[in-house]
Image (cartoon, rainbow, N blue to C red; front, side, top):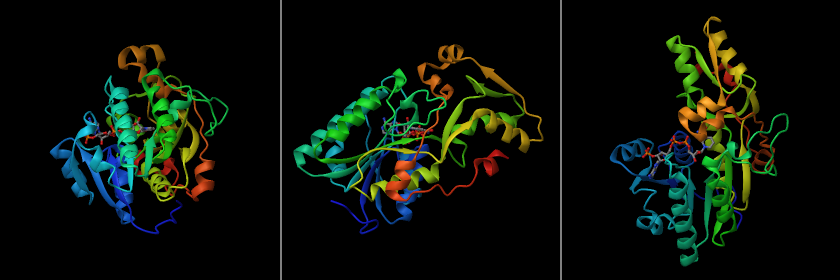
Length: 300
Ligand SMILES: NC(=O)c1ccc[n+]([C@@H]2O[C@H](COP(=O)([O-])OP(=O)(O)OC[C@H]3O[C@@H](n4cnc5c(N)ncnc54)[C@H](OP(=O)(O)O)[C@@H]3O)[C@@H](O)[C@H]2O)c1
């Protein structure tokens, strides 16, 4: 069921349309004239969605039975939401099983984009993870691997699972703490080691990757999405120091202390990772458009 790019506008139902990644996806979808309906659990989120030119649909991920039949009545669903609570995997499981059940009952095939993440690959060190790299997820995110597998097997879903790199944005994103510390004259906290490498992507480039894949339902399976395959945290901090007259101090925190303070997910930013997005580039022609992060206004 190959659909040529922009052969027609699509009706898209998105979860997480107000999030860091989701906001950029909604913007990009609207710029391509797709109709967007976004699940919103509050009036404040609904307002944000209206301001992005999309339509809010009141509902909560925790109770998918209340909205799933309306959601599958669209051409596509994008799952870019997460509760980031201790039960985030259980909440996502409810959505996944309701989606598989509803699409099978309706015998209606729809396009699905499901969000994974680079942290599912664990440490890669000097190797570069392609989509064939074995998963080694942090326990806090292990559920994502099995949910993605279930969705890829589902008969009535044309599923692409996107593994975003670490996402930065005009608001900061993964650089937010660094930038806040730099602007506030505080020492920048480096988690783990300054030698840690992060695959990174600006959220507007990531949003274009989601939309390029959305419009190609013949492309199923896993797709990594990163603009730079591995940037050392020390280079990010040095860029900030250069922008701030070389006066910045940094403070390196050990992994055990971080996990004790923040929980298991805190190992994520300490993973030394490199990730390739060649598959996405070759399949869709996608290329990042945001320039070098070192020159971004964000770092000023
Ligand atoms: N950011 C990154 O660097 C990165 C990298 C790789 C993968 N990821 C993955 O990408 C996904 C999105 O991340 P993000 O950084 O964009 O997260 P985020 O900014 O925290 O956004 C989370 C979204 O989920 C929605 N949400 C939370 N609980 C909900 C509920 N009970 N019902 C309905 N909606 C709910 C939020 O809506 P409201 O708050 O408006 O209600 C918001 O739109 C996550 O799975 C994350 O693991 C992120």
